[in-house]
Length: 204
Image 1 (spheres, rainbow, N blue to C red):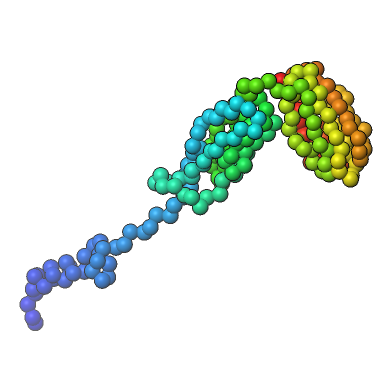
Image 2: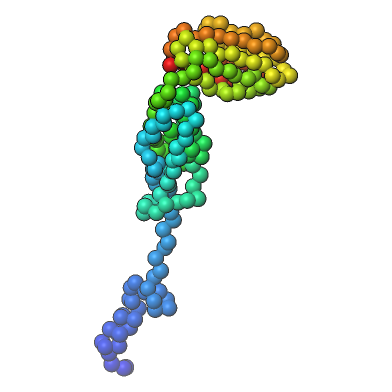
């Protein structure tokens, strides 16, 4: 019977227990981290515009868990009051005096920026709106207190100008309708013949 060799046993154990190495002798590769959208920010927290039609540009940035920007993420923009300011792809456009909140949303993430419109010049006392087929142009109008808005029909279909309260127009295909606004505030109206045909008058 051959003798017992402890050195041989020790060498065998070291060979069999080489932890932390791959079968080829190298270290085990680290699994790549999959980027996950974690935060969203807007370039400006607040915007002040001084006249209807003035614009400001906002940028939304989505970042992953390590803080790296994710430019491929889709961002949706909305305004809390389109009678004050509208937003499209980050471009904010002033409509009338007031305050609104612009929100950028990407998946479950969202960020907000405040928008204030403070016109430095007084609003006009007379304004005109064209009643086209299925749309009022412009859809948002601003006039001074005591001012008058006149709607002029130009389309081929029947439309009306209907307010929730106060004077409204008849349903017609041509002609005009005028209303004087003696109270400050925001007044929404619609065409009851065509769903989604809406407008607003802001009186300052």
